[in-house]
Length: 262
Image (cartoon, rainbow, N blue to C red; front, top):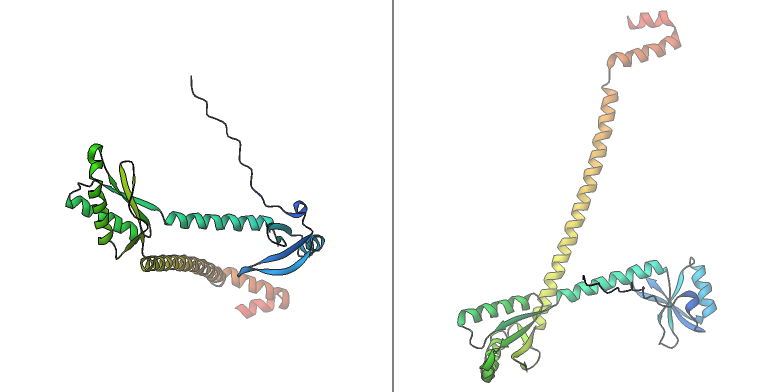
């Protein structure tokens, strides 16, 4: 028989307490500032906070810190507040993904070429801003030679000391011996500068592409307008003259106009 997949109930959205759910008599009220830090509105009663939220455009009163004294509430449009919170969470997740723990594994009997490959990979990961877990793997009775594993890891950390620092001493876990290397502060500074420069270039290219698109649209509008004007000016000359003659006929009379155009 086919195995049935366990049903998992949908997760409910975790919402902060807001509006009528707030029951603190006194609140410290703030409102968001587009430039960053929230603007304080002062300490007031719950009734005054509700009235102020309504006065500011029927906004929501959202509890952001219920453990402070007095509790802190923010007057905000909750849908916009939730969007900004989700956006901030995505940015945090994106940054955490940018700094990962990579791993390089090797045997204590590794030959020179393979060792250089592992060291090169570790250096590449460190220069990308990642932490690196260096692991020596023992098989069977090789665990008796763990001293050689310690020496191998010590050698690797010394050869990479210009790029990284060792977070702790090597630790043994069963048949694995490992430690973690992290980029030096000056290396991380250069990496962050490169990331900011790349992001700045990306934004600049997007802006230039958008500006170019607008200019192309404006050029198309100008071309279309010039084409319309030209079609009127360079239209059928006979039709244009007929219209003029008809208008003069109505104004001056047929005979006079015939003599004029002859």
